[in-house]
Length: 349
Image 1 (tube, rainbow, N blue to C red):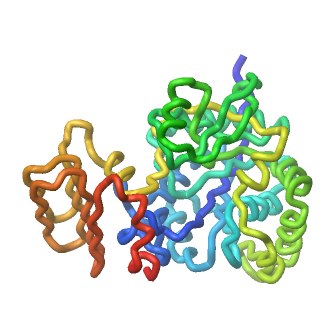
Image 2: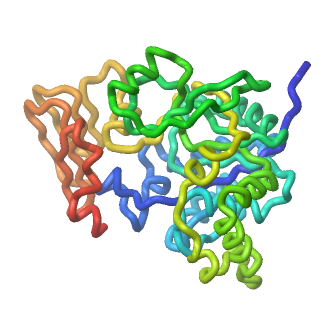
Image 3: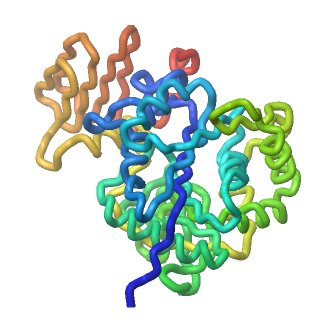
C-alpha cells in the first residue's frame, strides 16, 4: 500500500557568522548566500529541494535583518511564495524554530533545514522528508540520521534505538567524539551523523519546548504576539526575544524529550563546514588537485587554489589550501582548516 503523502512546511534556518570558509565567506555575506558549488548558492539549492508544491508548502525562512538583502532576491526565482521570519537578534536554533512554529498552524508538519548544506541525492532527501513527516504527524520529534561514511570528529552522532515505523526511536544523542570513539562507532554500527535536519508537528514542538524550556517558550510566544503589525515579514518584538538564552534545539529539546525519533538516509550530505570539506565536494575522484580561478599547481597533490583575481602558483606543497578574496589571502594545510576562525582578520570581516 502506498504511503500517505504529508504536506510539509520547509523551515529554512539562515544563521551563523560564516567564519569557517573565510575569506570567501564572511559575517556580512556568509556561506549560504555565495556560489561555492556551481551557479546556485547553497541557500537556493535548499529551496530548490523543497520546490515541489505537491509535497512542500511555501517555505518559511528564519533569518537576521542584515542578510535579507541576499535571501529575498535569491529566493525570488525559486520560491516567490516564501515567508520570512526576521529575528531581531540571533539566539541559536531552538528559539528560531519556535518562532516558525508559532507562525504555523499547530497541525502543520515542519521540516527544519539548515540553509548551507550540500545534498547530492534530492530524491533520497524528499523521500526521507516524507517518512520523517509521517512520524512527526504522530507526535515524534524526528531527526535525519545521516549515513556515517567516515569517522568524523566534527559531527554529533545519533545512536539508533528500537524500530519505529519507517525509522527508529533515538537511543541517545552523542557529542562530537574523538577519533578513537568515532572509529568505534563505525565499527560497531548503529550510529548515524546528526546533520541538524528535523521534522516536527508545530504544536507538539511548542508543547515539548514549554515542558523542557518554559522560559524560552514563553518569551518566544511573547515576542511573536507583539510582532510588528505593519511589516510584510514576521518581525518579533526585540525586547521580548532578546531575553531568550541562546540554545540549540539539540540541547534544549532533542536530548531531553522521550519522543525523539530518527529516520536513516544516505543522500550525499555535507555541511561544507570548512575548506577541506569543500575541496572534497568540488574535486573529481581522479583529480590530484583543484584550481578555481587563475592558478597553477606543480609537483603537488591534494591541494586547492581558489582565487578571485591574482594568479597563484603552488609548487611542491601537498594538501595545502590557498584562498584569495579581495585583499585577504588564506594559506592553510588541510589538516588545520578547523582553525580558520582563529584568524584576526576573520574575526573582523
